[in-house]
Image 1 (cartoon, rainbow, N blue to C red):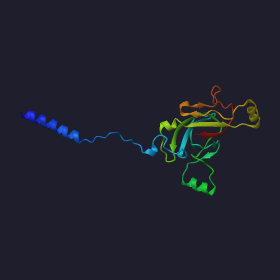
Image 2: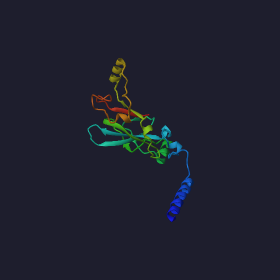
Image 3: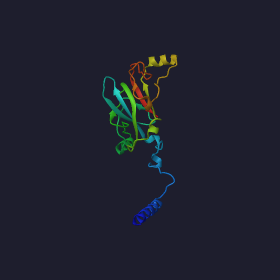
Image 4: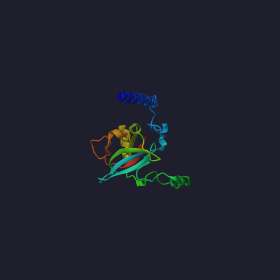
Length: 186
């Protein structure tokens, strides 16, 4: 009799505790609405490009702002209050990471993208970012390209393209020994 009483009271207590657990109809997202995929403003995003200089085997990183064309060989320095102050005074000489992006590369790829607050963006948003390299051309090459109808720019590359080989003649991004004039990511 005593065992039956314990079993019934345990079952009753289980029902009472189960009824007291709150039931939510839908799960809430963990991210704030402005940080969800695609929620960042594009002028607050910087793309990290991993590259290997011609004649080197060491990979380096450069951080360039989205929707801004960057001239190769220009010194990049970190955004911050000192940069903003120099920009107001007309003394800004650099753009983003304290690195001189070279104009001769053997390979490049999109490594990641971050906001100006150093938060990484979602993989869905990163997968939509495209970058392009514009090679330097002299007057003779420009005249030849006008006659042939070729464009001066290489195709866009994305994260899914992986490492883009710039010195491989079978690559669609082959530079044909030319230097790089500018970088651009959108």
